[in-house]
Structure formats: structure tokens, C-alpha cells
Length: 493
Ligand code: LM2
Ligand code: CA
Image 1 (spheres, rainbow, N blue to C red):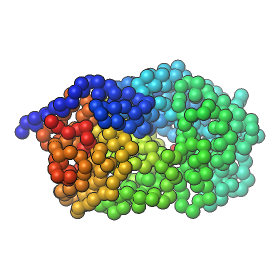
Image 2 (image 1 turned 135 degrees about the vertical axis):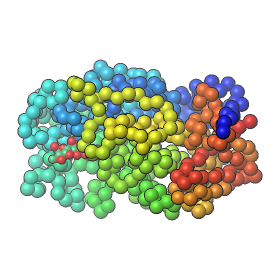
Image 3 (image 1 turned 90 degrees about the horizontal axis):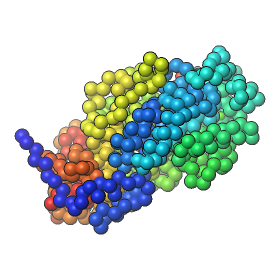
Image 4 (image 1 turned 90 degrees about the vertical axis):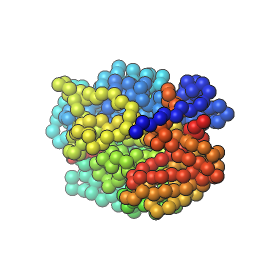
């Protein structure tokens, strides 16, 4: 059956697309003010040259504000992805690319409206017991990195038999012993702080807008504060502090100087989706065990949790799109979408060329076919139709408050007041859901199925990609696993 495409009768769609795509500050579409782009994406183990292409072809046009890339410094050699987390020197030279390629990436991304956030591995150096040579040729030993660090620059905690962290209930062990044998820098030392600061300054000089502080939980908050205190005002600091129940080191300690990845968000959301019904969809509203919204970076998964925690991942297809849609529709925190590659072996690195350099094609915008992914194939989550559609939805929702949700059977939905409505069905049966709304009557394009409609070059959608609003109610018909979302600028004439 043919699916007639309905065009949106929007004046000057091209100009609107341009105004939506422009990063930085908020924009207006017609008389409607849309929010500034704020969503980030983690492009895991992607070479700098491909990240630059992604910024130009996908991230900028979709309205991503920032991209978190994998560690840039020289690492130990090896094909596993986690070699990136064993620094040998602070030379920006790795299997992901050269210093020149890194600088070119930040410039091209900035031009496309996308800021680059670097992943700074500064808690430790390598976890190797034997001496070796790094990717860029630097010689090293476990506690010796010539020209950079000597044995006295490291913690030697003396609290456990092999100086490894054994008890997460001990703050001293967590912060001064070794995380899986990784030589732990004495970040209380002025000389060490100065060297880490110089590295972060160097990354800033190469054009990054901020840094993720890897393993921040393992660095005393006062040490991180001292290190980043010397950076220019406005530098984004994103601390990775994995919240652990009953542990002495808590994410809240790291909020005075920057943002924190809030692991609780996905841990609250995923089990509900897995159970097939949202029992606490707004996470109790008050968000216990969450850092404040303006400090929280929220995510469905990242490179560690997709390998470790029992959350939802790209493998879950529709359910994963649903989790991301709910996060993007929420009014809590700053979301970061995760985009990596398919794997069965948790250690397997991204595909490399004959010289060991990571190589990856740029993603084509389009729907997800996760069942067809072979190991090493990019998941391209950031280019999925549903994700791009929800990015547009989020900008239209802007700062409109999240209204109380409604449910019917396993379906659940809510409105961002006067702007946009989202509905999901994590259950196994077809569901119908009526969501109260103040949107005007009419037929609206579902941006989850149709993708962005305003920023599209040919705005519109097929007949079976629409949702009807009548008499203050949006009527959703949801197949099992379906997410559907409409916004005020997607109304058909
Ligand atoms: C992180 N955040 O706190 C990163 O997000 C996480 O991916 C890193 O672990 C970790 N901290 C250290 O930066 C990864 C990976 C580990 C891997 C380490 C170091 O998850 O499996 O450990 O990087 O490369 C590997 C081996 C481990 C070995 C260690 C040292 O898996 O068995 O320990 O190297 O050689 C003896
Ligand atoms: Ca430490």
C-alpha cells in the first residue's frame, strides 16, 4: 500500500531548518521559541577524522551540542579498546589519530556547532608490570614515564597486599590504592597536579570545550578541584563518579566545580522498561540519589555499562530507542546519547587497519537494524531516525514543564506543557493511550517514526506516521515496543 507523504505547509522550511540547526543560543521558528541544543553524544573509540565527518554530516544537522570522544593521549599498545585507558605519555598521538587530526576535528566540529569534550585519564598511568614502549614510541615502566613521572609521583598506598583497591568501603583505598593494577598518580602532589593541568591546558589549546575526568571517584574531589581550578572559566568538567550504594565517596562531592555523570538515572529506568511497564516513570519526581539537575549528565548506557551493568543497550533495539526517547523527553539533567560498535567479546577493540589505526565509516542517517549488526559494526545510534526526531522534539519542548504522566495498560505518556507529547509501550500487547494535551486539534507527524520534520529538507511524513489530537487529547495507538512523539511544529495542514 502506498504511503502518501504529507508535506508540512511551513513557510520557508529551509530557513527554519537553518535556524534549528544553528548551535549556541536559542532560536525562533515562526513565533515559537525553541531551546538551545544541549544534548551530547559519546562516540566511543572513533578516530578523529571520522568524528569530524560525523560533526559535519550528522551531529550538527541533528542538533547535538557536544561530542565526548575517547582518550586522546598516547597509550599502551594492543588492540583492546581499554588500552586507551592506560596512558604512557600526554602526547596527543594514538590509534585514534594524530595531534593534527585532533586539532582539525575540534575546528570542524566547532564549525558544525558541536563542541568536543575530551576524555582525560589522569588518575593513573599503565597497569603493566613489564617495561614497554607506547603507541607513539615513549618508553615506560609501571612507575616510570621518562620526562613525565617518576616513582615518587605515585601513590603506594600500602593498605593492601598488592596495593590494589580491595574495599570500596574505604575512601583511602579507593583514592590512593591502584584500580585494577593501574599505577595511581599522587594527585595531592603539586608537581603531579601541575603536569596534569598542563595536559588539560594542551587539550584546550587544541580546541576542546571541556573534559571528562575518567575515574574521578578514585581522585579526591579536592585534588580534582585543585587541578581544574587553574583552567579558564567556562571549561566544562564532567566527572565520572560511579555511584555506589553505601560507599564513602559520593558524586555530590564533585558538583562544586562541574557536572557529574549520574549513574542512577539509567539504573532507575532500565528495569522498568525490562519489566514491560513503567511503575515509577518520573522516577518519583524528587529524584532521590540524583545530583541536582543542573549538575547531572544522564545517559542510558556508556562504554562501561554496556559491558557491565544490566541495563538496556543497542542490542535491545526498540526498547533502547524508547529509553533514549524518555531521557530526551525528560526535563532532568543534560542527556548524553551513546554510540559505539557491536561486540560479543567485551575486550574487543574497534576495527583497525594494517598499521593498527582504528578505521570507521561515517554513519548514514536512518533506522536501526540492530539484529543485522556484525561485531565491529558501528551502531550509529546518534543517526537513528527516532533519536534525531527526539532531538528536534526536545528543542521544541524547550523549558516547558513536564506534566504528570498518564498510563493505560502498559502504555505511558506525558506532555511538556503546550509543546510536545511522548508516549511509549514497553509491554507485549497493543495499547491505546489518550494523553491530555493543550496542543491544537489536528494531525501531527510522529517524529519517532518520521524523524525530524522541521529541520528536514523535505518536511513531512507518511499517513501512517501521524497522531491525531482532538478535544484536548492526543490519541496514540502503540504496538509492543513502540515509542511515538509529536510536537507543536509538526502539525499537518
Ligand atoms: C574508567 N572509569 O572510571 C573507564 O571508564 C573504564 O573503562 C576503565 O577501565 C577504568 N576507569 C580505568 O580507566 C577499562 C577497562 C578495564 C581495563 C582498564 C585499563 O574496563 O578492563 O583493565 O580500562 O585498561 C585492563 C584489564 C585488567 C587489567 C588492567 C591493567 O581488563 O584485567 O588489570 O587492564 O592491565 C590487571
Ligand atoms: Ca587515585
